[in-house]
Length: 42
Image 1: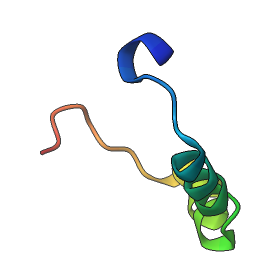
Image 2: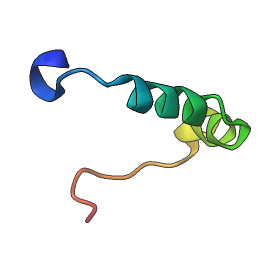
Image 3: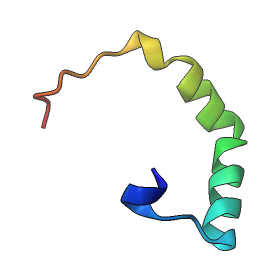
Image 4: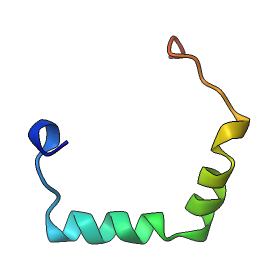
């Protein structure tokens, strides 16, 4: 991934950690198997 996108800076990393630790994000992620989007979905 580093080769494709580079590394996150400290601000980006903290924002991602904060987002990931959000209860709403965790609830949505825990239900990820309930929905299926085909590759052809636009």
